[in-house]
Amino acid sequence: MTHRFIPFLIALLGLSGTLRAQTPIYLHPDEAGEIIAPEIYGHFAEHLGRCIYGGIFVGEDSDIPNVRGFRTDVVEALRALQVPVLRWPGGCFADTYHWRDGIGPREDRPAIVNIHWGGVTEDNSFGTHEFLDFCELIGADPYINLNVGSGTVREASEWVEYVTASHKSPMTDLRRQNGREEPWDVKYWGIGNENWGCGGNMRPEYYTDLYRQFASYVRGPLYKIAGGPSSGDYNWMRVFMEGTQRQQWMVKGVSLHHYTLPYGWGKKVPATEFDEAGWARTLEQALEMDHLVTQHSAIMDQYDPEGRVHLIVDEWGTWYEVEAGTEPGFLYQQNTLRDALVAAVHLNIFNQHAERVKMANIAQMVNVLQAVVLTQEEEMVLTPTYYVFQMYQVHQGGRLLPVNLNSPRYTVGGEDLPALHASASMQGDTLHLTIANLDPNQAHPIDLRISDERFRQAHGRIITAPDMQAYNDFGQAEQVRLEDFSVPKPRKGSLSVSLPAKSVVHIALFP
Image 1 (cartoon, helix red, strand yellow):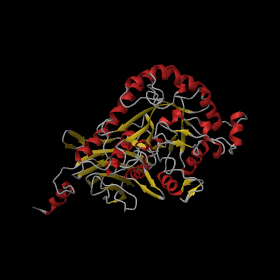
Image 2 (image 1 turned 180 degrees about the horizontal axis):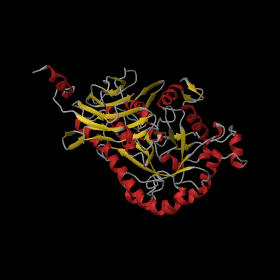
Image 3 (image 1 turned 30 degrees about the vertical axis):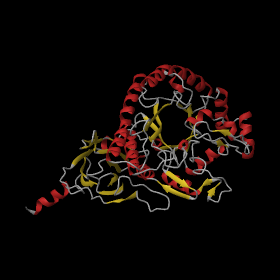
Image 4 (image 1 turned 180 degrees about the vertical axis):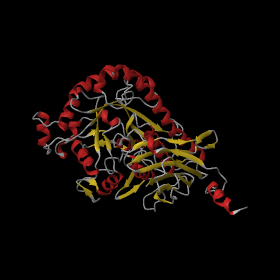
């Protein structure tokens, strides 16, 4: 064998030692187009379990270090994540929440029972002022969900006025009485939540009429978001879009909720106890988001070909069995390397559909479902999902770059998935490619072929671990984190690298 063949063979070898052909990926920087809305990287915080109390808010008298009652460690972690938008107070909780219960002196606020999540007492110590203060602390735009299920048009209208109005009125006088002179700049307002279910068990025709009523009295230059369908309920989307076609001036977005459940709602499994079949099944379910967004977008195109109404995926993420010994209604679950891959797949999909998807909100921010942060007393853990969001920050506000990728397949049992899943963007003169290797067994070598030869430098980062079940836990060294990844310099518009098994990789290319 001559020496000139050795580099070629090395390029074909995955880290597993198996001879594998390189997968070409074609990128054309001059085709960068649609802006990727930063709000695609949004979050969701509901009055559920330990998301708010103990996770975000501990009170000023807590021994846990805090800023005005907000956990210092959580605030710092979320500021580093550059959270663009935060949705609150729910979720199902939103349609039982009456905002006046959460303003004024805390000792005077009435307590209620959280009927949806554990039947616990909610003391309303975290209300409108606290939420908006928290958003300012972490640098996020607030997204408030109004109560349609058990609330009134007047209640919704007065909440908007209390928060956003500057003129003298009973609501602004009340706000000033409670310590806030100037209005807040709150653009995003949801009109109801899951109104097909916990938000009122309504028919789409009834909700559409109700939406038009509420939206008529929720006034101002607001970004109004309708309660849209669950997963593949295409009839809900069709009825709503048709019923508001002549009133599109009062609709800016329609929500979509879809959770990744490996075996459906009837058979939830633990977050950390799974085999390769469970790994593949979960990722196959995550990939379903692309089909849902495509189909719902097609319906929206029929009634809104100009794309004026946006698709808002304001609840997404994995949903497993709760951790042993925890309250079932608190939805506390661990978060493994598998969830990092799920997050990468979702964010790639949202990037790819940037022309219609303008916001997405992972469920949820702290201690609930696919959280980016977990807390336990004074301790805090950053999850594998946190590091994916940190890695993908580079796409916020970038221009979407098409990725021409004919992926090899990863198959196990009855599941057949693309092994590689990617998205790319341009930020100024820098090209960013994020790519997930869903194959837990094999490395996959790729050959990036870039039509522009001006890119002469490269930098890589990676999220992976030796075990597919790896996760970060309290009192333990991190098993999954964001690390540097060696990438060669491009030469004449080409760069070859092997993507390790079960990994998420970011490659930045610049002149």
